[in-house]
Amino acid sequence: MYSDWRQSRNRRAWTAQCSCPFCTMRIVGPVRIIVIILTVGLTWILASVILGTQSGFPRIPALMGGHEAMSTADPRPRRFKCGLPRPCPEKHFAFRVVSGAANVIGPKICLEDKMLLSSIKNNVGRGLNVALVNGVNGELINARTFDMWSGDVTELLNFLRPIHEGTVVLVASFDDPATKMNEDARKIFAGLGSASIKDVGFRDSWAFVGAKGVQDKSPFEQLIKNNKNTNKYEGWPEAVELEGCIPHRTVEEE
Image 1: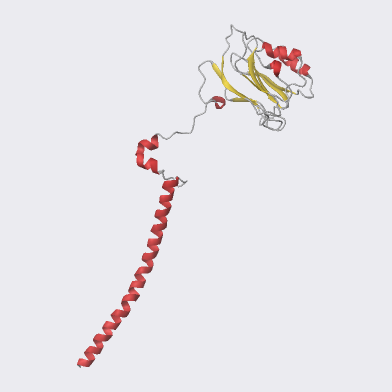
Image 2: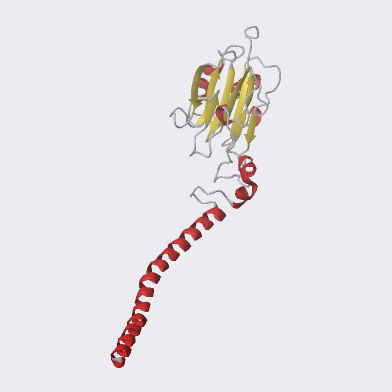
């Protein structure tokens, strides 16, 4: 009887010893999976915080600075009419004029956030791109392009000569603004306030804003000469850009 009891106790002990590793294996497996998942998750969150990825987590400086650091972060710069960095004063027109780049990228003329001439509007071309605007209300009077390489300069003269006092003239060159330019055309632009028209030559980049009846030279003019030693493109200088605010004309001034 004692022998049977001892054998029975030995069997129970052996069973207990055998079952413990099996139970441990059943527990350790899921625990390892959970640990791996937690490790991967924490690593991803930490990387997101440090690198500021697209996960939406703020960067460490923002976390350390709290709400104040997050609220003082520089927002995207605000742009105003025609892409100006600041608004124009009252009774002023916002404008932006960009000449063409080489013979590839067309010019742009914008006034009061309205694109008057651009490649997208399909109304620009080689030569001079000119917009005439009412100086009182900013309404577009006319806009045309004049081929100064193989066109007839008479068309440009007939376009500019009849304009009324107070008319604002915005000009952007594209490719070549001057091969067909003559003295009569240069005198007209000089009368509109251009100081650089006498120097505008073959394949120069030129942008200008003037007005009929101005007494002084316009402050809105940029000219970059075609020079093989300084040209940005092969055969052409870089584009020029003007932006600013044009004061309204009054009815009396007209």
